[in-house]
Amino acid sequence: MSSLADINSQIKKHDEQIAQLRKQAEELRNQERAAVIDDIRAKIAEYGLSAADLKLVARGAAGKRSGGAAPAKAAVKYRGPNGEGWSGGRGRKPRWVTEALAAGKSLSDFEI
Image (cartoon, rainbow, N blue to C red):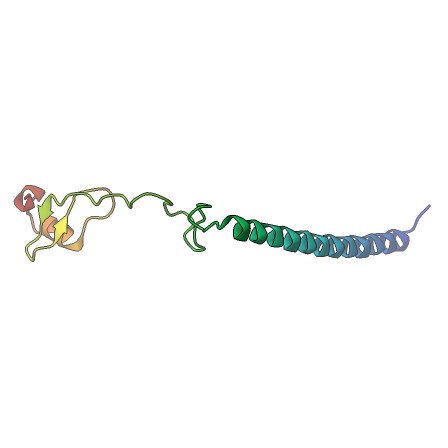
Protein backbone atom coordinates (compact mmCIF):
# COMPACT_ATOMS: atom_id res chain seq x y z
CA MET A 1 0.00 0.00 0.00
CA SER A 2 1.29 3.47 -0.94
CA SER A 3 1.58 6.26 1.56
CA LEU A 4 0.38 9.80 0.99
CA ALA A 5 3.99 10.96 0.71
CA ASP A 6 4.62 8.37 -2.06
CA ILE A 7 1.55 9.49 -3.98
CA ASN A 8 2.48 13.17 -3.62
CA SER A 9 5.99 12.34 -4.83
CA GLN A 10 4.58 10.56 -7.89
CA ILE A 11 2.26 13.49 -8.60
CA LYS A 12 5.18 15.91 -8.42
CA LYS A 13 7.24 13.68 -10.74
CA HIS A 14 4.36 13.51 -13.25
CA ASP A 15 3.78 17.27 -13.02
CA GLU A 16 7.44 17.83 -13.90
CA GLN A 17 7.13 15.43 -16.84
CA ILE A 18 3.98 17.21 -18.03
CA ALA A 19 5.71 20.59 -17.84
CA GLN A 20 8.70 19.22 -19.77
CA LEU A 21 6.44 17.70 -22.45
CA ARG A 22 4.49 20.96 -22.77
CA LYS A 23 7.75 22.84 -23.25
CA GLN A 24 8.83 20.38 -25.96
CA ALA A 25 5.44 20.68 -27.66
CA GLU A 26 5.70 24.48 -27.63
CA GLU A 27 9.19 24.35 -29.15
CA LEU A 28 8.00 21.98 -31.89
CA ARG A 29 4.99 24.18 -32.60
CA ASN A 30 7.25 27.23 -32.93
CA GLN A 31 9.53 25.35 -35.33
CA GLU A 32 6.58 24.16 -37.43
CA ARG A 33 5.08 27.64 -37.37
CA ALA A 34 8.33 29.18 -38.59
CA ALA A 35 8.47 26.67 -41.43
CA VAL A 36 4.87 27.42 -42.42
CA ILE A 37 5.52 31.18 -42.34
CA ASP A 38 8.61 30.73 -44.55
CA ASP A 39 6.58 28.62 -47.00
CA ILE A 40 3.77 31.19 -47.14
CA ARG A 41 6.21 34.06 -47.66
CA ALA A 42 7.86 32.16 -50.50
CA LYS A 43 4.49 31.57 -52.19
CA ILE A 44 3.46 35.20 -51.72
CA ALA A 45 6.69 36.31 -53.37
CA GLU A 46 6.41 33.68 -56.12
CA TYR A 47 2.87 34.69 -57.07
CA GLY A 48 3.16 38.41 -56.27
CA LEU A 49 0.25 38.36 -53.83
CA SER A 50 -0.80 41.33 -51.70
CA ALA A 51 -2.74 41.58 -48.43
CA ALA A 52 -5.75 42.73 -50.46
CA ASP A 53 -5.51 39.62 -52.65
CA LEU A 54 -5.63 37.49 -49.52
CA LYS A 55 -8.41 39.59 -47.97
CA LEU A 56 -6.39 40.08 -44.80
CA VAL A 57 -7.64 42.43 -42.07
CA ALA A 58 -5.25 44.66 -40.16
CA ARG A 59 -4.68 43.86 -36.50
CA GLY A 60 -6.99 45.77 -34.20
CA ALA A 61 -9.74 45.80 -36.81
CA ALA A 62 -11.45 42.71 -35.43
CA GLY A 63 -15.18 43.11 -35.33
CA LYS A 64 -15.12 45.76 -38.02
CA ARG A 65 -16.50 45.19 -41.46
CA SER A 66 -13.98 44.02 -44.01
CA GLY A 67 -14.38 44.61 -47.69
CA GLY A 68 -16.89 46.91 -49.24
CA ALA A 69 -17.83 50.42 -48.29
CA ALA A 70 -18.74 51.59 -44.84
CA PRO A 71 -22.46 51.61 -44.14
CA ALA A 72 -24.17 54.87 -45.04
CA LYS A 73 -25.12 57.19 -42.19
CA ALA A 74 -28.81 57.62 -41.52
CA ALA A 75 -30.43 60.78 -42.83
CA VAL A 76 -30.91 63.60 -40.34
CA LYS A 77 -34.58 63.85 -39.27
CA TYR A 78 -34.27 66.35 -36.43
CA ARG A 79 -32.32 69.60 -36.16
CA GLY A 80 -31.41 71.10 -32.79
CA PRO A 81 -31.51 74.75 -31.74
CA ASN A 82 -27.79 75.18 -32.49
CA GLY A 83 -27.88 73.28 -35.80
CA GLU A 84 -27.14 69.84 -34.35
CA GLY A 85 -28.50 66.96 -36.39
CA TRP A 86 -29.98 63.66 -35.22
CA SER A 87 -31.36 60.78 -37.23
CA GLY A 88 -33.67 59.59 -34.48
CA GLY A 89 -32.13 56.14 -34.65
CA ARG A 90 -31.38 53.56 -32.02
CA GLY A 91 -29.19 54.32 -29.06
CA ARG A 92 -29.00 57.21 -26.65
CA LYS A 93 -30.64 60.47 -27.55
CA PRO A 94 -28.30 63.45 -27.87
CA ARG A 95 -28.14 65.77 -24.87
CA TRP A 96 -29.97 68.57 -26.69
CA VAL A 97 -32.91 66.21 -27.33
CA THR A 98 -33.18 65.00 -23.74
CA GLU A 99 -32.93 68.57 -22.43
CA ALA A 100 -35.60 69.79 -24.85
CA LEU A 101 -37.93 66.92 -23.95
CA ALA A 102 -37.38 67.63 -20.24
CA ALA A 103 -38.28 71.27 -20.89
CA GLY A 104 -41.67 70.21 -22.30
CA LYS A 105 -40.92 70.32 -26.03
CA SER A 106 -41.69 67.42 -28.36
CA LEU A 107 -39.67 65.82 -31.13
CA SER A 108 -42.08 67.22 -33.71
CA ASP A 109 -40.76 70.69 -32.78
CA PHE A 110 -37.37 69.70 -34.24
CA GLU A 111 -38.42 67.74 -37.34
CA ILE A 112 -36.84 68.82 -40.59
